[in-house]
Image 1 (cartoon, rainbow, N blue to C red):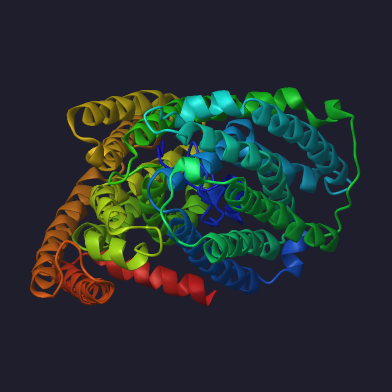
Image 2 (cartoon, one colour; image 1 turned 90 degrees about the horizontal axis):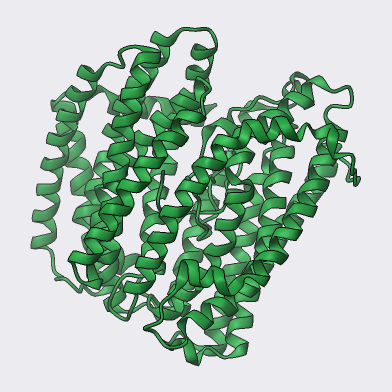
Length: 583
């Protein structure tokens, strides 16, 4: 139900679209599957005895921070090299196409079906699931290879479907050319995701966590080399020579290939050996298809929303408007806050909710769901305030480099202001979705997704028609916000008959206090930004000062008001995070 630009599932280690932190790649995900389900998969007992939980936790925590940091730097350098106008938008659209095809083929099914099946076969089979995994990888190699070749052959219609912009001369042709270079990423992305799943089910988490960082470093180096050779200057689609296209497109493809290569030594370390097996009947494909049918439905419906989103963004994208690249940068900021805060909370609660559902303790599941909703809201609210109040200094501090112009930064700030409204509703809707997965139930989220995506499309098209192109990126975010709220409400309504009361009164009381604290913090932040030097187009130094001072004032004010208003979830989350890091 995300409706947003997101990373490839292969980049979400330890678990996007389950529960692995992203590499910052600008892949589309039908659903931001930073799902904790994969992280919480327990390896076989013998592997647990050999593996230090503390070491795994430290590796994943450090790897997540480095991955997010290099992923963000990756997007920043790409923006500096290509700019936030037509060429940057063409690159973003072309890079997203393989992610869309990948998600439809494998992304959702990997998390909801294949990982649990691999865990079961690892425990049940006499060979530890070795033969089953070899069959699965053989089939995946064939299917992903065929899909990549077919996608390259269909690059022109894929460009028309997702990235048409006939008003900009040479734009569609550039997207198609870049797409032909990047669409083979489908093969490497899928292979990386499957290898990571195999490693995780064998208790090895380090390589899947760190391999995407290699990808990020290659792309960062590619963009840096592009700047060194061609300069950080604004060019049009027709000015993208063969050398420019081959460097930026080919370097992006090589990054994913190196990510796969970085995983191969770990397979030998856990005792897995490659062997092609073509007896696919032993995979139980009928069962896999039955289990994954609703997830395929979920992904397919979400793809419709993404087609509309990209067409609107590409039609709006021009020199001073927010197109795909700017929208993607903002969505990455949104997902960074969600990944660090909300995913940590959901990861901690998911095993508890799953165990409660398995035991029929639905009241306990409802209590955890209520607690998670209050915690997510209380902790993400000050971040949302910072995004809204400090949108301009954030945009000018983080993105105003090279070919990313002052106008691009201004357009970014407007989209970030709208995105701030989406942060808390998005996290809550994700929490409720995972409550269904804990039951376990993939059917209901898929059915909810149909009207939710229809609502999102309606709102986005209406805002696109009513306002100028400069508001299109913000309008897409507002459409997302409305759909997240609708998804959360529909999920809560459908969950209640199954799990009982979810403590709506307690949730509303906490939300009321959070809103008061957030408004107080916002007023304090606005006052500080108003008094500090710098206007709507601050210098780099002015933007940094506004960001640091304004952020400190907003955080301090919110924390003080939270203590006065007795928002206990704040101290509860702090304690939980400290315990988790200590483990």
